[in-house]
Structures are given as C-alpha cells and as structure tokens.
Length: 163
Image 1 (cartoon, rainbow, N blue to C red):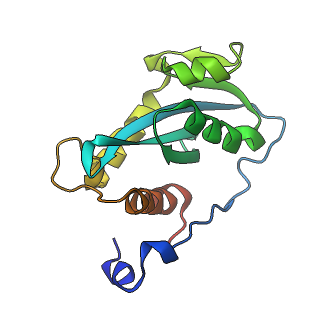
Image 2 (cartoon, rainbow, N blue to C red):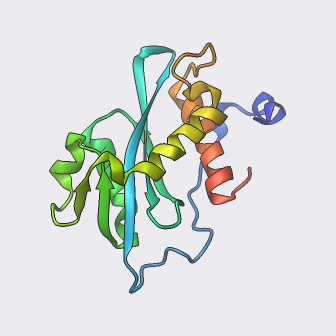
C-alpha cells in the first residue's frame, strides 16, 4: 500500500474509475463463459459483513467485473448489469439463491466443480491482502477504505492499472 499517498489524501477525495484496458473482451462471435462467486470479509467486526462479488472469464481467468456490498440480490444484479456488454453465453456458479433467481436456467450451471478457478482466485486474494484473512488482527475500519484497498489491488494485479 502507498502510505505516503494515503497520508496526503482523505478517502473522500479518492474516486475510482473503471476503464477498459484491452480489446480482448469485446462482444463478438466467440462464446464467453464466466465463473461467478462471492467472497466474505468484514469491516470493523465480523458482524459487519462485506462481500466481494466478482466474475472471471472461464478460459483466461481474467476478472471481468466486481462489486462490493452485502450478500443480497441487489448487489448481484449490479454485477450482472456490469457483465451485460460481454454477451455471456454460460454462467458457472455455486448454489447461492441469487444466481438461481436471476440467471436464465438454460445458461446457468451450478456446482463447485465448475468454480475452481474463481475459488483459487479467492485464495490468492486472501493470501495477498491481510484484511481478507478470516482470523486476523488486520481489518478495515470503514467500508470506504475496505473497498478502496481491495479495489486498488484488483485493479493493479488483474487489470494492470496502477495508481
């Protein structure tokens, strides 16, 4: 983390822009299949849960989109809206209810064996970002800083965007 940057800027001054950095995922004739999952963390105390919902390209393992929020349908729908431009042909998920309620059953495949890449990505995130480890003394004290730290990491290591 860039402590000098954080010392000179307040979280209220930080804006996060989502930009398309390559042409790999333009909507075209090829089929795009995604693995989707949600990852638990907390802010302040374990009673204040925060979820990272994200989707990765099943072939390349690249993160296509992510959102933060509660484990609620509204947050899943935000992620689904972000995926709309990719023309997804098949969704691989676990059996969480939001997926079954809002995904077309003909495009939706349920099962842990189909989400191994995204589960591996969870392990990588938990290994590299201390505040995502379940038993830790390092945790976020505000939702805003929690989302900024994890968002900066994802943008840097998944999209190659450094700030």
